[in-house]
Image (cartoon, rainbow, N blue to C red; front, side):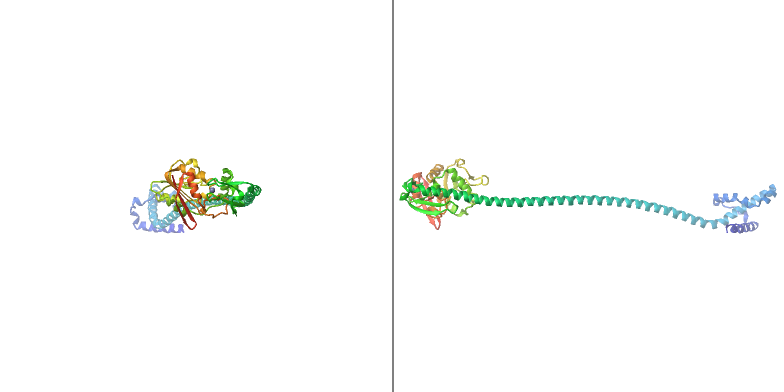
Length: 415
Ligand SMILES: [Zn+2]
């Protein structure tokens, strides 16, 4: 088809050239290199036999003619070639563009692959971390279960030991006091017994006795009414114990027994002293559970305490040893203490030593009567005239007494 178009173009060029159109001089700017190249190939269109036959003048004419044909051909072919060129150029551009897109897509795919690999790597790390955590949790659970078993075993062991300790304590305590009771059966009838308040000694058979049984395993509690001072004292087996054994017996008692709250009675005894602001006061035998001291201190009273069974640490106002007490007090008060005094004369003389002249003390106790007798720890009941006798022997005088129900209180003044 190209050859047909070329033939047609040559025929039209020859015709138009004869018509004078060929005299038109083409614009040099419109002559492209491609057109020049095309012009050079025009000679090839002339049959070789004509090229040999031509003379120099004819050759120039042929050459001019060929150039005209060439220029015409260029002008003729140009409108036809341009669309092809434009289309070809567009395809090239499209190809280039597509190539760029492909590159972009490849780069994008590479980035996605890298991102995917990174995500997989992170997920793998997290999964590994979770597996480790799960492993740790499992280990911790095993440890806790093991600890729980150890704790359960320990609790069971402690319960077993407590039960054995209770059985052993019963055997030892009951056996100890039963042994003393057997000895008393053999010896008491032959003995004289001495009142701890007035020191009066009387043969056993002449004394009026009261017998109870200890609720804490202490066996028979035989007590005696003093014919001189009127107190009730005993049992002799407890009064005659060494002090360290008495202390051990109290320690055993308080290891498993707590006395009731007697704060109200203690405060009542304190106020029976007619305390004055600025005075120094001592709560004797305040106990480890006392609320009296903080209450009275909050009210502005300078109150301290003493109790050998109090915790060694805790309130800074409680002494646990007598050698820690060096002050002179304006008043001493107690509740449920005097009936525990194995040597009440010695105790009152000690109180005398730590009280300022004119100082007072109030000892409240239901045991100014013969009450709460079923315990070996109550060894003296200050019944009868015994409070006065005790006071006279130790440098005091009884200045007041009060009773209301089970609350009984005696106020003593230091002479
Ligand atoms: Zn007596």
